[in-house]
Length: 155
Picture 1 (cartoon, rainbow, N blue to C red):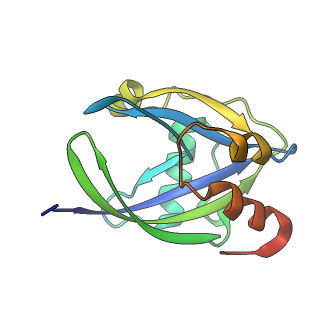
Picture 2: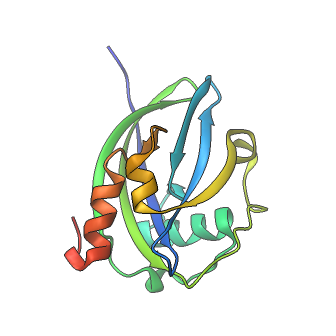
């Protein structure tokens, strides 16, 4: 029986003027060959609201500093289960959409775990992401983000 550690998180869909989304390439320290792409964001600190956590994580991971209120309402929420570094998590997470004209990613705010497990970043078009054989999370990202960008609102 798998025992899950509960976790709350906030993630950011950072989209540039060309409609590309920023993803980081990471790996699980317990499974170094398990590579995947993921959105900026992460676990919330005790007592932290999702918007506060999303703004904090965005600043730490990309250098982009926004007030939590600038994020607006989440565009979707989900619960996911996954292993990381030998621990199974059940994570409730909210996604925020942030549009920028462009952004030069600054990862100097990475913590020790991020420095060890994040190997790079890339701005992805929805077409390239949907056609890619590489693993990314969430696995339905192209469809969900496509709907949000097309004005479908939250999903």
